[in-house]
Length: 366
Ligand code: UD1
Ligand code: UDP
Figure 1 (tube, rainbow, N blue to C red):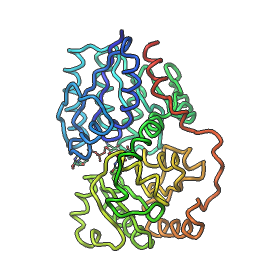
Figure 2 (cartoon, rainbow, N blue to C red):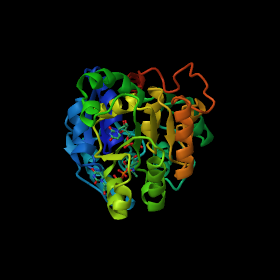
Figure 3 (tube, rainbow, N blue to C red):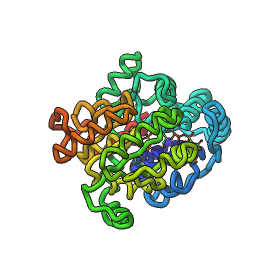
Figure 4 (cartoon, helix red, strand yellow):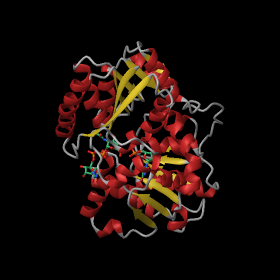
């Protein structure tokens, strides 16, 4: 029997952990997992909704750290994790993705000589101004097991001299979509609630620091969307709401933009699947757009999910109102087929939907 502590803290962590915890439960005679929640995200719509909807076990402990500056938040999570890890001495600490909780958990464990397993290892944007890039770099360099979603991720690690413990397993977010889509179709009423018919709207999300800390970038994205003639549904992260409140009515009253609170995962899957185009700066949403074969515009200057761009289904348009508007017009003219060269995706670049089972087997092998 091996004992694993899995640390989660932010919205994408909860989603990524769902298929993984399910795979661990199916091997309950050989692996016992304790879930620890850092408290990085705490609003119902950013945290508890995922536990309720995805059937996640209640975390054994919620460290209740909350928001703060990077150092403050990371430091508090590290301190609290150190206490828990020292007491529990798990065989593995599993961390997911690239948020501050991921970094804090990995550092705390590594310094206690508890081996770290990183799910979603090897991703790189090559932009160190992104807090997530710093987190990824550091976590990968202290991890013993590195579970890569893609071939490119393995290559990125190789280029940094990391070869030991590296496994290409596929993407747990693809596992999650496959596992929860049928449930979403049965349970979600979001299209009816919002009065939306399939393929009549664009779905957009914006929350990256680079797009919210510079209000001009956020204003440019919203203005590009608003002037595009698309009806746009925007489930907005609390961070973005805060900036919008500062920007005031000028933005909030933009015609054709429908700003709504963050939605649950099942609702998000339905909104994504039936959108005619997705505009986002989220890592996870870019991939989900590809899973559903919905064309995506990414309002960033680079992406770590290069496969989405190479496949032709994702285009980088920056935070540029003109480029966003032009790309949407081009798409409309082509009946919402990607206007750029589209390579047919013969093989799913994100695995076969069984990444989580592979991760569990590799943890068992040590
Ligand atoms: C974090 C991750 C980002 C990820 C995102 C997923 C880091 C450095 N960034 O960004 O990679 O894409 O989560 O959603 O870890 N807030 C609330 N309620 C909440 C949570 C946050 O109001 O439940 C507000 C607070 O004002 C907070 C701000 O959002 O200061 C930012 O939250 P934080 O967790 O620091 O970063 P995210 O922007 O959520
Ligand atoms: N998501 C959600 N509700 C929302 C917005 C996003 O459930 O209102 C889901 C989305 O489908 C994806 C994940 O959250 O699975 C992505 O998380 P986020 O965009 O917060 O972070 P990132 O992937 O950029 O780190």
